[in-house]
Length: 265
Image (cartoon, rainbow, N blue to C red; front, side):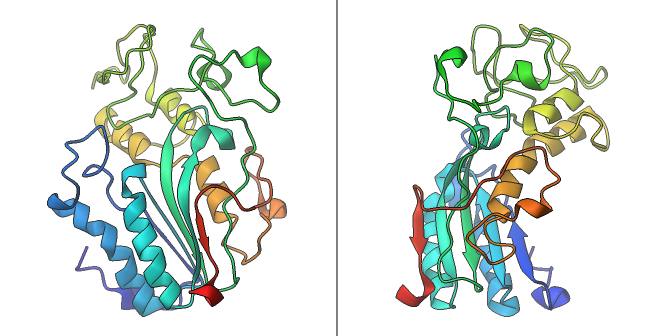
């Protein structure tokens, strides 16, 4: 990463970064900053200091939130308004209970707010018929094929962590068939991508292992769009006119997390 020079990107309007999650993920060894890859969480500031983009969006697993909060303080000193917090993917129309720690920052506004949820939060054991609409999307909604009527657990680079009984152990995809074996057999890489919110014809590249790595490392497009809508255009209202994504995006508004007005730093 140190060989990539910020000066090569002079003139950019915004900065989006997603440092490696493996050092902090519950699916990994959780060595944190002791893992050399863990130090990459500080690299976005190297680019911000030199490039001073108008807006910044950074995402990681929830364990990194305290680091984002510290970085938000430093961004405030550079004149950015910031918001830090954890967003739940199913609250933005993604059929998966993925959680991501988000840092949003802008030079264009005095306050940054997170996107307002467009769907209900999933709680284990909820009966979907008793929920207000729009409710969260389930695996059955995304794929059908007799899958459970609830969102998927987090899709990882090894496939998924759920079985018919709700077991959360890793399920390994078979390299040659592109399918995994479990209580619900025959899920393809494309269908795993659908649980992330990608279209079933998304052009994943390489062999099955490579494709699963791409699926598992991605941030769901619906969640990314919702977060970016709150900083890209420098307003406190999500720009519905630019939305070609099927996920609904509502106004950005005060919510759980931390907003810092740049004139109060």
